[in-house]
Length: 324
Image 1 (cartoon, rainbow, N blue to C red):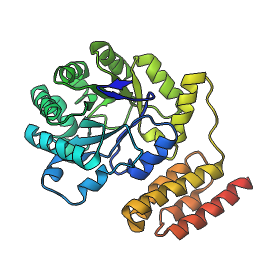
Image 2: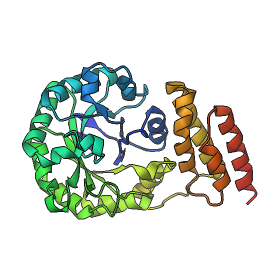
Image 3: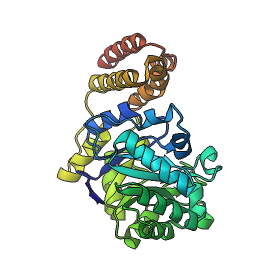
Image 4: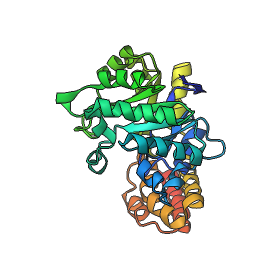
C-alpha cells in the first residue's frame, strides 16, 4: 500500500483508539505485524494553546515508522497550525484527520464525525492541513451521521479532491456508535468511487475477518481496532492467513501473559507506574478474554496499583491455567 510518498509494507493497520493506542500498545502491535500505527487523537486547539500533556500522546518509538499522528478539530487555521506542531513533535510520516469520532464531547463541539454534516467545512479543513505539512494527509470517517444521511461516498470523493492521500472508512454511522454491524457494502462503494487507497474499518475481530473485509470491499488495507485489544497476534495471524491461507494458532497462555506484562512495563516507563497500572486494569483483562473461569483474577486485576502485584497475579494465572 502506497500512501502518497510513504510505502506501507503490509495491509493491516492498528486503528487509533483514545486511551488505548499509547506508545506501549502500538509497539507491541507493531512487533506482531501491524504495518502502520496511529497515535491516539490529539486536539489541535490543545497543541496550539501549548497544553503540556498533549505532546506526550504524540511520542513515537525510535523504530515506529511509518506511523501517523491523528489530529482533530474543525477550524481550518487551527487544524493547519496543529498539524504543523504535531508533525514537529512526533516526526510522524503521515498526518491523519479524525472526522469519524462519535463521542458526544467530540462531535458535540463540531469535531470528529460532526464534520460529516458539512462537506464544505470538511473540505476546507483537509485543504488547510494538506497545505500546512509536507507529509501525506489521510482522513478517517464513518458511513454517515445516521441512516438518514449516509454520505460516505460523497464524503470520500470530497476528501480525495481536497488533497487526501488515503482514507479510512468505518462502516457504521455516528448514531450507531460501536453497536450493530458495520456496513461493508458502504466501504465497497467508497472503494469503487475513489482512486486513492481505502482502508476498511469495522468488525475485524478475528484474523479471518481481516481477510473477508479485504476481499469483500476490495479495500487496500484493513484497520483493526477493538479486535487487537489483548490480542496483538491478530495482525501476524491475519498476515499469515493472507500470505499462505493458513492461520496459525494463538501462542501459549504463558507467552500471552508475558506479553501483557511487557506492555504494562513499557507503559510504566513512559508515563509512570501509577497511570500505567490504572490503565493495566483494562489491558490485562483484555488478554484474558480467550480464557474462561478466571473471574477472581479479573477482580484482582481491576484493583492493580503496583507492578509487583501484576507480577504476582500473572505467575498465579500461569500456574492455574497450566493445571487445567
